[in-house]
Length: 67
Image 1: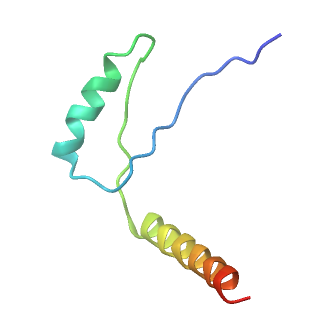
Image 2: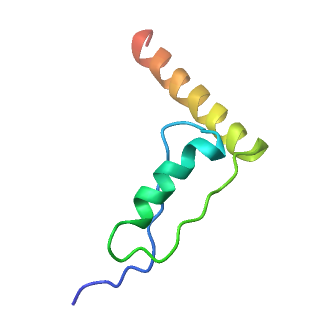
């Protein structure tokens, strides 16, 4: 028996202006089976999470370079 999937999340490579993302949203809407597409606005929390991830990755990289 296989699992039933009700949604997929798409993560963009960087933050884009909403008018620039419209082309991407329209392309996704053309895919068979897509009912709706919604945009998530970048805010302080998403920026904070990104910065923390960068810092953590940087610290791990330094540990590899200078053990």
